[in-house]
Image 1 (cartoon, rainbow, N blue to C red):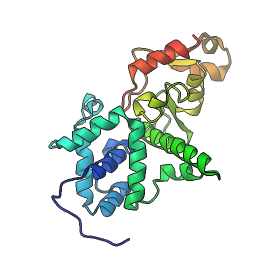
Image 2: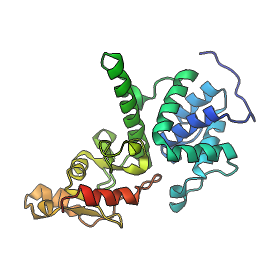
Image 3: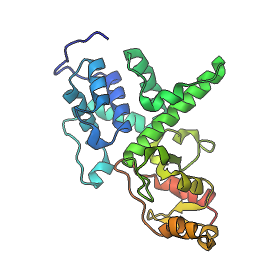
Image 4: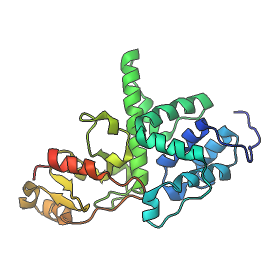
Length: 258
């Protein structure tokens, strides 16, 4: 790749902002610094300094009410176009995933590691197109949800990424509009993800864990000590993208088997 001198002071284009917002969603906010390898890669491709890219990610953080609720402030001086990109893709998360994927290809980015498996596709043009789109949405969703929860299970605090699942609150099969929306997600270890998916676990309106009677009546030592012991505990809140209360209510009404 030909190296070019960084551009200082040049306004950001809409395409560059889309790429920056996609990156903002994929990494924990405290990692949006000039030393992050993904920040450095974006800086090289966009011919900007790593500090410039990191500042732009900080600008997006200034719009994030979830960060402010945790006492974390983004950087000020965000521009009008920054806000437009932020608002547009909060209304259309699948649009962000598709636009960013196209722009990464256009600008010659390497494959994001989280997307690498998503691009291992079967033969056949139709099947490849459908599965590529679905897998890239899932890859973005996982990265955004896990980074928001600082790669920890929201119930147990387990911090082994390979054992964590980005759980959809409203499943894809019910409403595809929310398939890439990180506010439609919870970060859970695999066991609790399965319980949530099968309606044996729900999250209350005040964000506490509630199990079905089937789990609470189970007398097995493991069930009682490692699962039911979390009954009534408040979930660990994400740093960004708080779970949408309307979707949690949908899960309680349509999935939970209390």
